[in-house]
Structure formats: C-alpha cells, structure tokens
Length: 196
Image (cartoon, rainbow, N blue to C red; front, side, top):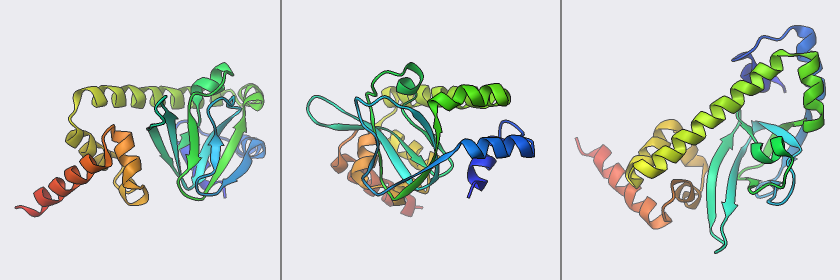
C-alpha cells in the first residue's frame, strides 16, 4: 500500500526502517469519488496530499464563472494549495477528483513533529517545494511565450499518458485555449504525424 510514496521519498532521502515506520504511522488515507472536492476555495488547507491512485485537478474560477486549470496531478505526485497550507489563509483554488482517487494526507500540525523526529524530511519537503516552484515558473513562461500549438506539444511530451485520461475541455482549460481550438490543433498534429 505504501510502495509508491516510499519510492517517491527515496528519490531525495534515505529512511531507516524505524523512520519509515514512524512516517507511515503519520499518514491518513483519504478516498475521493470522481468529481468530489479535496479542497474548495475559501477553506484553509490543513494537509499535504500524495496521490496513491487516481487523477485530480487544481483550478480557479474567475468572476465570469470560467474555470482555469492550474495543474493536473496523478499517482506518484504531491498536490494541495501550498500557499494556503503554508500561510494558513483561505485557499484561492479548488481541487477535485477527475477519477476515483486514493490519497495519503499529512496533517499540517504533525509536520513540525515529523521535522523534529526525522530532520531529513525538511530537506525532502524543501526539494518538493523547489521543484514545484520551478515547474510553476516554467509554465508561466511557456504560457506567455509559446503558441497554443507549442503548448499542446509540450503538454503531450511531458505527460504522454494524461491525454487519454482527461476530458479535452480540461486540457483546453489548462492550455488557456477553447476546446474548439484544441480540436483543430489535435487534428493538425495528427495529419502532420501521418505525413512522411
């Protein structure tokens, strides 16, 4: 049950058997049905989440009621509203399940205990936040400098399996284009792949 999260952690730090057992004892399991919220705008994020199974989306809704998807998260990834979590202020984003999902939760109040008992977890979560910052900055730069076609190609290159799992309207929202534009781009890319 814990193989995926332990493999994720082992990318950055090495745990002893005792440390591993202590960490696992701190995890709570949360199951979400498709379309069920993990976090809604206005709530204060109390947990960091690791996706053991499933797919979620993080998004904002503007004053016109339009959704803007910030990120998708699949098994083996961490998710949450990091700003709300770190500042303990109301979330500006929503997170819900695109598929039935199972997550491990780490309580905000428990994090200090974890850092005190196993200091190397401070390094682990620092690296996670660094990587999230880098990914966010890259996404902002790409959204401002690449064409819609280039953004779609980058998305497919980075997340080859996700196109099959996600509704096209969600991919379009993530790319900042209309579903109709995405259909045209996909058709053109398919034609280009078939042409020698």
